[in-house]
Length: 307
Image (tube, rainbow, N blue to C red; front, top):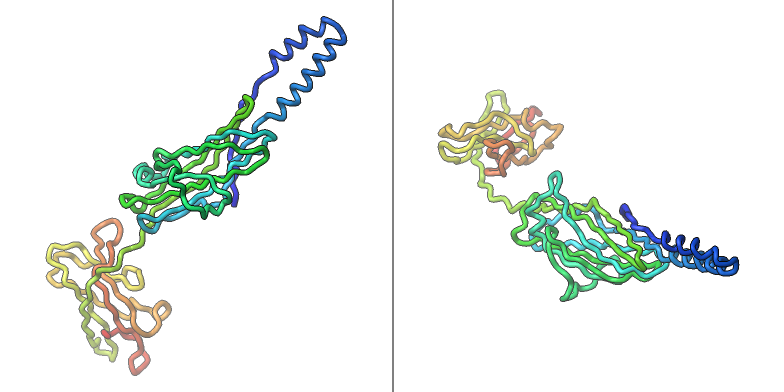
């Protein structure tokens, strides 16, 4: 996918030239005609010198860092639509609105260098300008007439980069030739930190099978949370079920009945049961986990038991 940015152009010249032509036309028809011809030629040359810059990118607009130290490369292409070479200066700014993290912008290391293609597979030069999204580096160069120049922006999440944060860099270019200038930008890039969830340190649930008296059974799971601990709840298939267990209860336990593991959601066999803290606005990580077994009794009725 490519993007094109908004442009602004500063144009101006000609008032003095017109005055000169008017002043000299009266000196004679031949001279006036010659000056007018020269004026037309000069205007044509000036038109050819106008600067036309754009920015494009086929790089993904939204990327995730799944670990610190991970790098992301964004290719930004400076498009010179002019008929003259253009000296340009490309820079970046970090967004500061919405859910954007000002802290993350300071924790992403950034380097920029020119490359032959937008794949940006070349090694980062040792002398490549560097900075952060909060204080980005600047790339300068000359784009030949009617050319495309690729700049590779390599960003790396530092070890101190916070998790669950977002920064949205915006790229800009300015350039000029023969007194003419142009400006362009490209935006809507988002970089997010979404680190992998660490391996579970959940402890094993205790389990006891109880006969309900009608040839079916249910399971009771238990966990050894201390007195005065958080409030706890049971989760089956990621869904919260049953009642909240108070941290004041001397024995932390909860039944697992067949209505909590309906056949429409859970086929016969082992089903994972988790216990999480529900003291906060969102459930905590899995603290205890274990399996129960669901299936029919000899009469074909669904029941729950321990493995």
